[in-house]
Amino acid sequence: MKKSVLGYVFVALAAAFWGLISLSSIPLGAAGLKPLQIAFIRSFFSAAFIAVLVLIKSPRGFKVKLKDLPVFLGSGVLGFFLLNVFYISSIEKNGSAVGATLMYTSPVFVTIFARVFFKEKVSLIKVLLLVTTIGGCAMVTLGGAINLSVVGVLLGLGSGVALALYGVFSKMAVSRGYSSETSAFYTMAFSALASVFFAEPLSVFSAIGNNGGVALHALLCALLFTAVPYVLYPAGLKFISAVTAGIISIIEPVEAAIVGVFAFHNDLGALGICGIVVVSSSLVLMTVFDSRKLPASLSGESPAPNKTQTDDAATKTEE
Image (cartoon, rainbow, N blue to C red):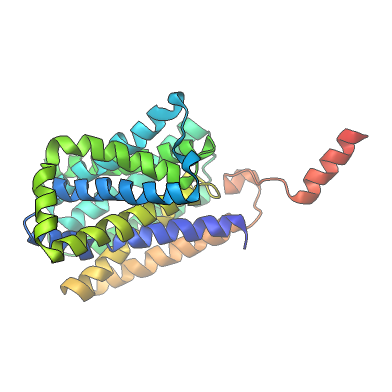
């Protein structure tokens, strides 16, 4: 399997798990937990799960350079924590459909940040696919009549910026040689530290200890829908660009809409179905164009030299 394909798979799986989080977050909310308490559950218990994974794989995974701590602070606080704060608040103002759509303006910000911080070239093809994918995402999530709150819109855009920042800081971490587990652990640890001040942790632990259903959904929310995807996503960034990963991850709100139809009996409608087709088609085209060896001016990425090229270069050096 080509490494780029592996990157697509990791990022797509991460987005798929993220898209299922409502299966746990809605029951947790129904049990009386506040949105920021659910965010604390995601951060705190995910950090614990990933810490065990790092210990099993290699305790050296906890070792980071002091100068790199700001990167993990950025992914944890500016990325994951603020994403939860803005996204949850946006949902409270305008509902989940608008919140999800505005959060997934993130590829626009990812494209900007990747160009600024990583000097990644952005092709016309990627720009067109980006616009098409966001349009399809909007078709899926914006089916009904909506009374928009300006504050809610700004918060939703803030969640898009936060999600983009998470991707950029994760890219920084893996580019500096850190494993996806190390990146995910410190992201969750810093996010948990920030959320402690808002989540009333003692009441969270009490709710988990006194209710088996809450404990089960907390486990699913933290392990399957948070820890696993936040390990997979940085792993995928080792093989594909931040821009490409940002586009692929838009499948999350599409999947979330489908989950809403089957699990919570939401009405997707003809427009939503068309949106799913648009998004799926855009992602397939993006994958095809990115996997081909296009000229740098079209692909926007510099292909790594293959083994033969490397061997030839080594031979010339020896001569």
